[in-house]
Length: 434
Image 1 (cartoon, helix red, strand yellow):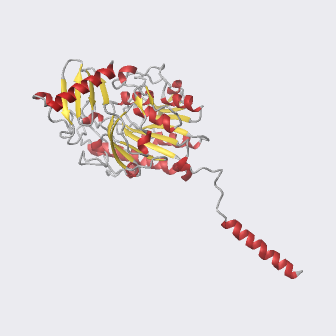
Image 2 (cartoon, rainbow, N blue to C red):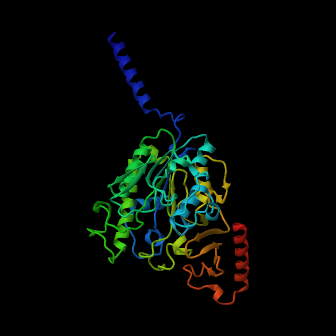
Image 3 (cartoon, rainbow, N blue to C red):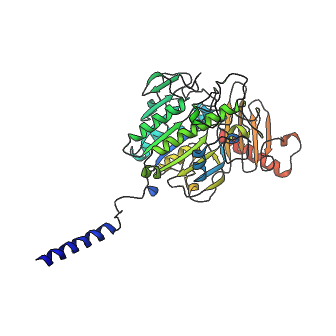
């Protein structure tokens, strides 16, 4: 009897040992990095051009941004990503998939009609409401109307600053679920708090549009622990703007790191991150080879050729991609990432395939602006670029040999190649705008 008991204990121990060493059955638990329903984190940096971003040759003074750098280094950096020269048109093109002349949003402060179908609603139409959707941060598609609630477009949740900027980022108007109140938490930190809280409440795949306001003016000193620019005094007019601008970028990076660190490992692995600058660097802080005449607010490269990094779930390529990408292309791309089968809609063409496979995307890319000064538009192919205006002025550049547009080819006779390119660009421009 004693021997039988001993044999039973030995047998039971062996079973426990082999049971604990058995490979876990994962047939019912999909690998989060291959999920068909990834979380989508879309981050917009306000007024952050290439000259203020690591990984680009433009600019000699760069911020310390380990979290943004990691997004870039673990994914794909698009070198020919074109936006609008101010923030509202970039946001409108992204959220509608349409060029500005179709929506009427062609300059900062223009109002997006509530008749438009926005990206968040389109995703849920295409996926049977699979995604929870939120916009946190700067809206700036309702003009100066602080009473407007972006949830009217069908977005599940909105919290942020409805207008374009504030006098102080330590004392500003926060709108959440249609109710506005004064907020004294530093704006970049508060947006991140709201994003963390919302993501933590979700029990299905989510699409978070996180639009930071700083480093857009006013220049200011963020909380010291968020940046490496030292003990900056309160900013006053006439000071060197660049340390304050860099500090705001670093504070944003600090908060992006806090958000990502709050995600559980499995949720982080199932998240794709898209990071963009919405237009070029403000002219007060533009760095060579850009200038105050070729940065934000212009259709020159310093105003519209901005950073875009994509990494995370489903992104297997790393390094750089030189394809021509339009802001409007984000609509179809993000919709496809969420499960839509449509690769082209309106003025939007999905570049989702480029995240895994080398390929080609567009032959031409287009941008435009309509300010108090002029109605202007621009188009380029891989080599040549034309800027034309309603007043009849026209410029042409060879971006391969003159990437910062110092020599207007139309100032002298064109070669046969240049003349052919000009005719082709003008024909495509006419097709787009008509």
